[in-house]
Length: 561
Image 1 (tube, rainbow, N blue to C red):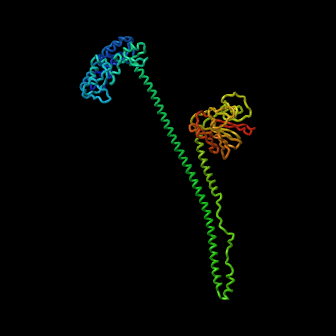
Image 2: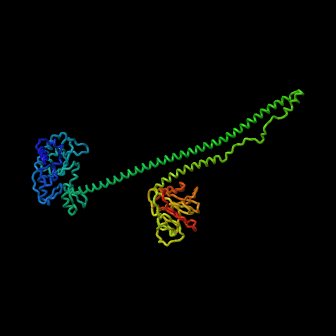
């Protein structure tokens, strides 16, 4: 406390000008909150707030209980007020400094620029206005504003930030300040209007309406900011989705390039092997023919030599030489019997077919790897599916856990709800899906007939049903143990290498895709593409008839391994 007294004593006793003090204190600290002007005879309330003595005295003379206008503290008795000499002296110094500053810096004031409110009192060059008076309806620069800061009669005028259209704040009918607001007619009015044209209306002070609407605007701005924040979060979410999509796309492209490169290499390798095989056969044929030709040419050479000798002997006139040489030249030289010898072109039948079959095996291995990878990706969207007994045909028997269903050949007496199938041995899942992706697997082992897929919410469950997309069914089926069809309307026969024992069903709602997989073979069975889903989708199961026990095996919703 001694330190605080020492500070005030030092501060009060030092003869500093206001320019030095202004770096510590601001104009707002010397303004009375009632008259909004520099303190005149400032007094302090018990709660520690300061007012002009005249202002607070007049206020308490008409307002009871007595309370502080700043903190709203209520005093049981009217406090005894004394002038705060320290604040009074500081306010006087501030006022004097403000006057000196106004007179000394008038030449440094800014000239009014386009778009700024000019001083109405300036002659010649118009300076920039600092305040507008709602009583005088005039805007003032710093110099011309001085009387409103120093003269007691003008100090009570209401000053606002510079406004260009001050006449618009006056009532055109009574030439009075628009200081009230008629909530009935939603318009600003003057005091005379409130007791004449708007006498019975709900009229409040303009400041109160301003504060109320400002509060509403604050709430509206908070709502708008919240909306902006939600949209920014949505933008971030979309950007993250785009990033994830790009990563997925890059991964798919890389995998696709790798697979197609391997396929291309396989095709090129198979083609090269085929060409080498054919050329090798051709080379062997040419080598064989060359051997035969060489041998024949040697025999021709021997025969031509013998022919020359025979011709010379036949032209001889020696009666002794010819008879003696005749036995050796009369016999033909040793030669090969070429009658059955020939060069047969190689057989190429089956060469291309065998090469293609080998390539097909290689492609099948690559395709299996591809489908295995794809199956692993779709299995990431596995969902828990259970059967809904309220939709099951009365002939069907459901397991307690809702994971198995079979045809029982005995119709149970069940209530006929709108959701229950009454003609076809079908049942839906409890779960429905209206967005995103989902996947589930169903064991169909040992069954001769079955239907699987998804259906839309609004399907007809009564009477005979035609399974096709136009009716809200996206399904495949098995008939007569080995005949598989996609019920696409018309049906599409499916050529499968083996009968599936476990079928996976994958749906991408937004993409409009329904795909069926042979889980054990990791092979795609069939896909419905370009579907337009607008309703909830339900997994669909049909056991078909029991067929005297031949089709008694259940459909089993299997956990994803």
